[in-house]
Image 1: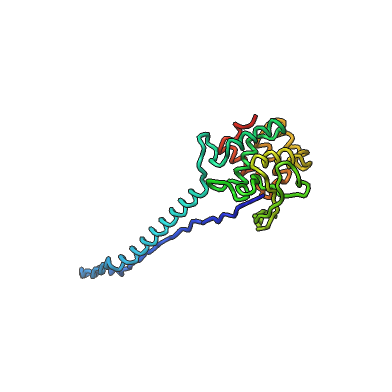
Image 2: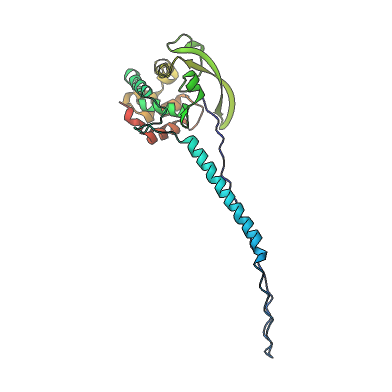
Length: 247
């Protein structure tokens, strides 16, 4: 499964604290009525420079934090189509996903959620999807040679999760003639392997046309190394109302 490494910028909190305590020793009044000498007030100049410096540092940190937040938002938030889908989801993708559901039973909502999860990169698609038309991060196997729509193998760097740790590896993926061919291959070949076709949860998802159930079936069958893969897909289904495409 292709994962484009994205550095996360942690927001740092700057704390400026300056407290100065001036203690004046009070003298009790004598029986003769003599008065204690009042303590000299501290000059405001002693506090002005540290206070202004702390204020300047705090303002700089706040401006920097807002700048980072804006950059992250612009990178991660995709432009939307009039129907609410990310702009990189084409009508052809939607139609082909629905065609595959009619022919093989794989819920279209889950298919679209996988495209967004696997290939969505902010306002566009990943390099693997754009250059090699692989929308799902599907790995190469020798048995795929000569299948309809398959061009051949191609190597890409990717991040995968093993035992809770993320590691960088070079994986061999499938290169397709078109994105439409990729979606068709997923249903007609990839998901026909016994690992997926015989999975009880996937079978129930096909019987009921339930995209969320399909997501959990894919994770159970080992589609991805990400232990939260199904949760990510379901969140996308909710966010973009992908269930409307299930039939």
